[in-house]
Image (tube, rainbow, N blue to C red; front, side, top):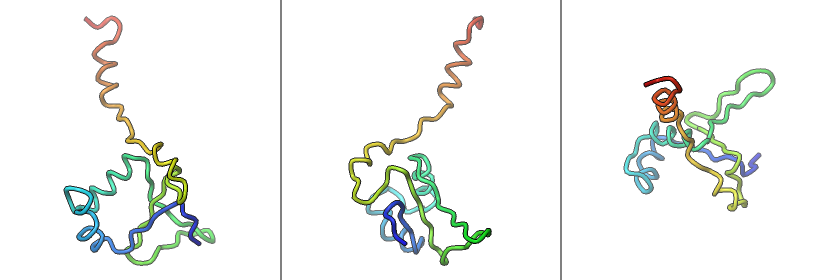
Length: 99
């Protein structure tokens, strides 16, 4: 059933060669997935009848709560996640009593 709340990459090799270079400066699937994760997309894992069901060979599905077919106004809510590394450094550097 296609609900319009996710997208599939059915052939990662072809996707990497033909699609990624049109929109990115690379053709590396792992880098693309890392970018998706930074923007809050998650890989969909299907669980049916109490066990994991493996998808078709080379079929990877991703979803995001604001990535919904026909709901373009939601796309502005997809933002890159902020890392805590810089805030951690700031906190350690500016702790009370540290001089």
